[in-house]
Length: 362
Image (cartoon, rainbow, N blue to C red; front, side):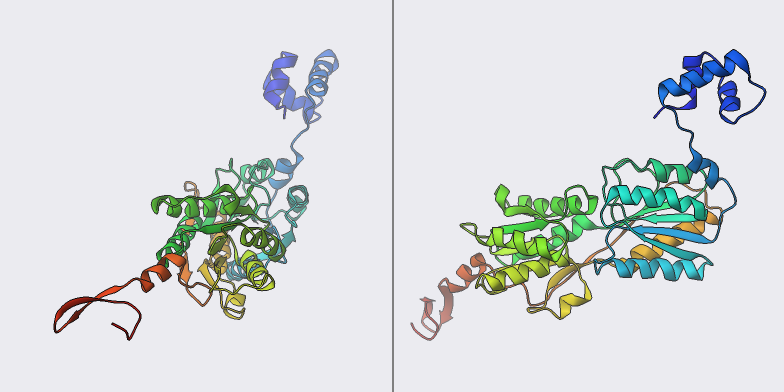
């Protein structure tokens, strides 16, 4: 996008002259003004009305854009943000982008009319440009990206230890004797999904276990894609004996697929999810999952905005919250562990040592 410096260079005038022409000042007239406007038209320049509007006095509103209001993980994030915003004298204005980056950008443009003190954004596409968010920040509005971060964003962020949580879950499955592990990922354009894939691969590499390309299936962070991608994994030969799902919704879909294909979890296929939703404790079998606190993500984001609004001019804040592996009934022993349990054991007797085979027989 063209800027005023490029206009000044093309029109061979000063930056001040360009500013006066664009602001409608009567001090620049005739051929000089025409030259500037010709350069504006040639470069396709559009003035940044967003930044101009945001420089006015702010309201006590904090805008929040979430990517999918139907995802049961997000209400906790919203509640954490709303509780903290309210305690600090702010009111939360909620928008749902439906994982549509164009809708996200529309909200960003329209929120300027509310003159918000801050914005909390869970982006729908990390490859999308954060230029609108940067315009807010440049105009003095605090902006925090949560959970999903644009690659080029250099401002405040709040995330969880996605890679480490995924690593610990995968390492646990390997420790239970699983050597053929599949993964259902979230969308590749989201940072949290990519980090969870990285943790999975790191644990597998440390254990010197191969990952056939078909053992990693990309889903959409919903139950339906978890179901379909789990069926793909289960129909492979040989099939994975354990599946790590990049969120609990994917894992719930995987549990349904295992049952519908006539298999049992965890006897035939073990499953671990990510998020530790409340539903993880009521599905059958109960779901092992990596816990991250959605409430704390939202609460910390809102607190960062409140602190910035009170004058915190410090450097970029990058908060990364810890995760915890919650173990339940969806993980069983893998083939490697079962093979070890059936091997003859060396036992001591009064006559020395001997090998024991089937229990109760010499």
